[in-house]
Length: 436
Ligand code: GLU
Ligand code: MG
Image (cartoon, rainbow, N blue to C red; front, side, top):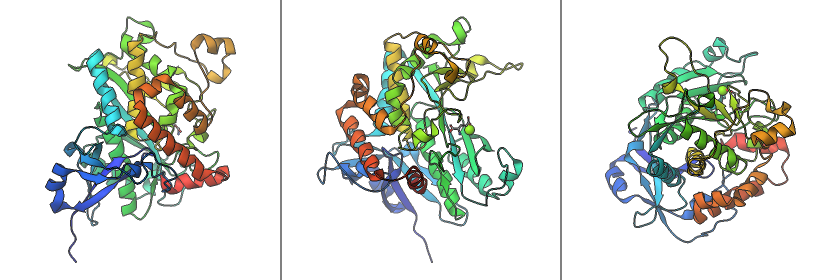
């Protein structure tokens, strides 16, 4: 039996899911020129597939316009290779649609470049659960944990590399059948494109073996979280890094300090965009190597933003390797919403010339309330409901998102919460495990 080559045009939606429409490969040139029409309400499909409410109902049309640079072809061995493009959403005349997450992130990056001359360099680090061979006892970081999963790691690393993702580290994480993959940083929007592709490539390779790569924020009540961490640094247009400055307190470059202060200032609302599911807040609990307060921590994996270690080995260059890690994130969020949130808030911190945050070196749980106040540290919201309320009440967030994206995102997330009403904590987690 002969098989046709098949391509999907996809959008990373408000739930971080890749949804779109497909066509036979011989239609590609036509589709690249014309885009593919879709109802705006398609963006209101919750992660559980219900459309509870939509600002547009059955009306209107927007276009999925593929970015040719995002073409992805996943080598799946004897299976047909999987091909997709990532799209921007536009109006029918090709002008940007204000509800498009990718456009929102791009606009933030463009504003950063125009106003400050700076470029964000970043990399998304992912944890996920692979449902392959049965878990073995005591498998955290264990060589045998890699071995029992057979060819999966090999196929995954090959597929990532051949799609230009530049994988760096791959390891069995602390959780049962949990793995972590990191890739090299990229400039601007390309970092989020990589994250979108990485998730789909992992899912695709897992499916090729008859299993699942699951990116749910938690797999079970009280279990280890699947985090997504965004490593970021700033550089000038000519590539000079400005993250590290040995002449300033804690070696934090001026713009990096202002940028990071901006992100921390608005974190209680921004988490609605980056820890975007109801169960994301099960992950962000004390002493789970994930954040609970709005702190910048020096090499502390329980901080909201971590100052990553700098090698002191001969030949290493701190200016080149210095980066901070935004840890209030998981794969329920679209990478574009994450990048957009960090860039818009960081840019605002530079505009407002905020002082660099004072890094914490002790467990934030042990800080007195005076000390917290002095450092400007606040608790993160304990639920998506609370985070959304902060977002809606934030004049700055309203300004960055604009009315269309703000309303669409709000309605989408309220709908997601509505679907979960009446479910027990275990049932809620199970629902997310089944879809991510
Ligand atoms: N699994 C942790 C999380 O939920 C992160 C562990 C680590 O630091 O790698 O973010
Ligand atoms: Mg990890």
